[in-house]
Image (cartoon, rainbow, N blue to C red; front, top):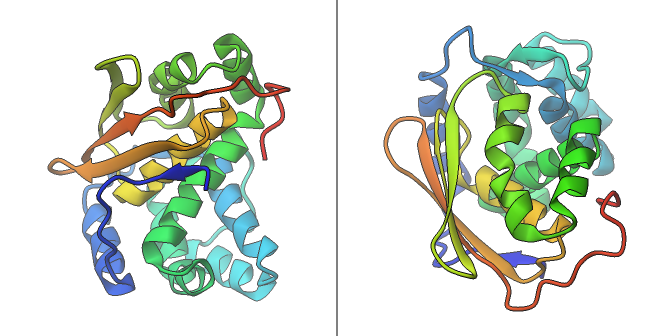
Length: 219
């Protein structure tokens, strides 16, 4: 296992579908995100061998395709998730695991981009600088929200964000994949909502965080 949640309590699929519907009510037309978030989710479906589901998701959001660094309305993500989440939950062993995988895929696609590779190089393969650069990464990836990272000790940190419309497991998966990319395998992350479109992620870094062999190699 490359990362863990602390004190997790699994919720059923119906809970997360209702949660997504509630979060969608906070989204405004000016809220946009980059295309790689959409492409990562659709690619995850393709790796499961379900091209028909990919087609249904594209039809649900009214798009033929997505381009990595084009900006698209955040609202388009919700019909995709409503369509895909039941299948992803079945394949990944539950809705929370599926949402976490969506977050992981978002990190993978961002870190494979020019901006993501630059961020990895600047962090020199160290988890703390990489996590500390997340607020800047979010500004590149989305038009809304704000975030900050606080380090509470040598191994413990906190990422606080306003304007996050995805459920907490998505943020957990995103952060854990970032830590994994920096060699911090075995680290932990717990995300929780704090009011409308706010969340906080508590981080606990692994004691041993070996530097990866190649900063640019993210899978």
